[in-house]
Amino acid sequence: MTFEQQWIEYDYNPFILFSAAGKIISLNAEAQFLLGSATTEELFNLATSYANISFGFKTTFLELEFGRYKFFAITVGYESDEAIGIKLYQAPSFKINKPKPIGESTNIYALVDLCILSYSINSKIVFEKDFDPTIPDIIIDSNNFIKLLNKVYACYEKNENIVTKIFYRIGEHIKFEEKKYSLFSIEVSAKNADEEKLNELKVLVANTNFYIDIQKKITINIPMILS
Image (tube, rainbow, N blue to C red; front, side, top):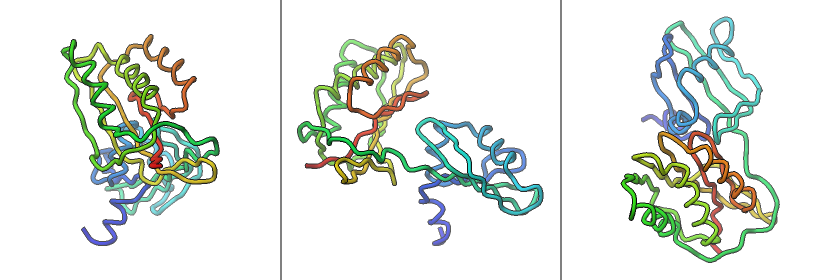
């Protein structure tokens, strides 16, 4: 890739180039994550709805939300009838002041594996894991985290497969006592969710200090507190 192409590929803001028929021609890394929360059709319709009447580029400020993603503006551009591109600008999130969470230094992979193991013993569910292996040990309330993650898995216990993904939230942070901390996420997904268990999860979440996004996938957002 050229230097300019690398800038697009690693941009914090999603970029997608569509054909005139609405097929994806190219997209950057962040757009690939966005497609887990928004459909190709939704994004193509967004691009065509906010495009300039004539060829060129147009930036529109508006509030959009797709799952964990929140945007404050989009730029749509096209130079011919063959292709149209859209770039979505992410709104900053999780920037709040509150007491820093307490707990003990813990290996997050060990906690997740423990929860998976407890479900695997008497279950035929296949647990698939997609882990970024570079998350260091963090300060976390292990007991409450295990209770929470077990409740998340309970929402999907009627599925044959459950996918657990651990990844950094690039460019996002949370602020405790005027100090910023990076974030990572534990995302759990399956084909079907138990609505009753989801309601139970929402009640549990209301009484914890964890930041959770409950959409088609359930995402636990955790600050990188190392000491």
